[in-house]
Amino acid sequence: MTKFYKYLILAIIYFTPFILNAAELPKHESLEQSIKQTIIDLVEDNAAFTSLKPDEHFQGFLDIQTPRVTMVLCSDSRVQVDNFSNGAENDIFVARNIGNQFITTKGSVEYGVDVLKTPVLIFIGHSHCGAIKAAMGDMSQIPAGIRKELDTIDVKSAHDDKQGVVVNVHYQVDKAFEQFKEKVESNQLAIIGAVYDFRNDYGYGNGQLIIVNLNGNSNVSDIRNSHYFDNIKNVAIGVETKKTASD
Ligand SMILES: [Zn+2]
Image (tube, rainbow, N blue to C red):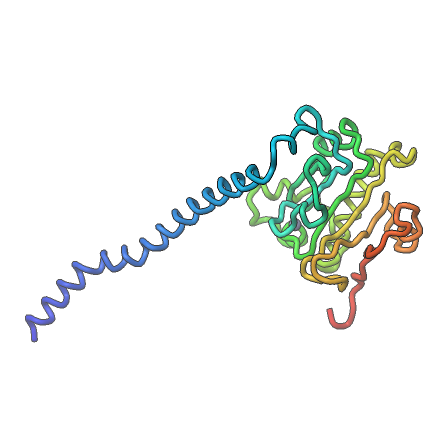
């Protein structure tokens, strides 16, 4: 028996590193494999795209872009331009950052509005926004670079992140309105604030784009009565974010 235990202990000492390595290796290989597969997917998806597009497809915008919309969108991967457009190419000039902010992407927005002269500027927040949740919480543990980006979000008046998403959109529209007031008042530009609700947090259904602000005005009746929204079907305007007993 003594000999058996001696061999058993030696076997454990000898094989344990291999067992541990074996346990770690698949994870390591899996991450490498995941990176490789992601790169393959990007390359192959681009190849599929080019195979579907004849050269003539690109001819119209080889030397100039003519978008109609400047869009400020959160970087969240669950929110994509395709969710609002059947053809964003050469039509939507996009600036993205965490929290769909004007201030941190001001130069890009100015380029869209003042240089490309898009007549519509839209800020789109979204349900379950991590940037809003972070800005409403304790930011002391957040890395400095990210904290700096979140510093320009002001959602102090919100009682939860669902309301915070909307408050932030209003705030961003207000900041943009200060910048582009003349253009708005001379009807060269409409600034729209919206929320993309992939979770159905606001009750219009999953994936709905909800208009919450027009040129700094968040009054639902005013927005609905605006000539910009005349005869638009299936438009969702306004959200109910007041605190209720069930909150
Ligand atoms: Zn977000």
